[in-house]
Length: 324
Image (cartoon, rainbow, N blue to C red; front, side, top):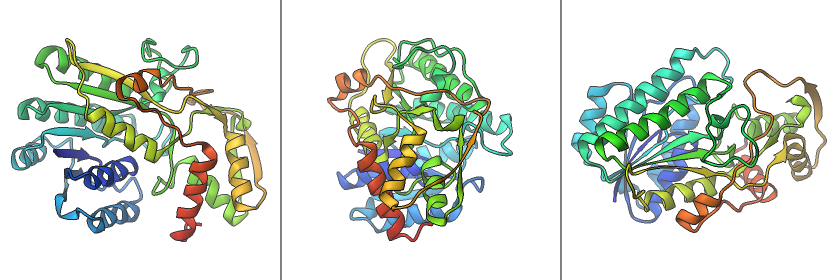
């Protein structure tokens, strides 16, 4: 297939693109290399994709999804059959990020992708949502049928808005969409601002680790290779029904406390953490816990890599790339 991947230089986009190339698909990347993230790391991910077997089937356009004319030209030039939409303004509490920056990327940009996908007649559009849409008052484990009407931060609200837009395009235009609610993704080539790499770097350097909520918060940590596999499995199985729309959790269904997560890193690195226990921050959920039943029913797959296995892979990658 010819698959357009937005956010191809991002953490999950990089892994999804690599898997698509490995199985023989043509990948058309789109990424604006947003300077709010780690641009050298994004370029390193793209360089790796260009060096993989099958790299002749990979191209990446440096473009912003909020710019409708540029995105339209890419769709008209590349003729994608399916789309994986992963570009977003990320992070539930990114320092200095304005509410409008989240709305621009996650609502306006998503609307442009939906519109171009509709105009191009793509057969399936898979997009990243987030476990954070469950917000307040959702009893665990989280099931896709929950109302998800009480987000706790602007990022979560924009992701929920994206799901509603997808439903609308399915109803009005018959555009098949699958929204994937990712649960705390981690692993090699991950974002430096996320907890796993921040913890790893602090441990390696002997610096204190800030543990909000005193480390008691539960997170359904999900290894990135499992997430990428789930994306491909879903991409190959467009939804049926009217409208052709669905939401699926992508998580292991086995949450662990942040403190226990740090303890695994301590064991792998052979060092003890200096912990700074802090109150929980506004906008953070006490726990995330996926019910992955629907994903397994639809695709025959559920994330299975344990935290011990996943963190071992992360530590090995960090050592290979001198991440400290």
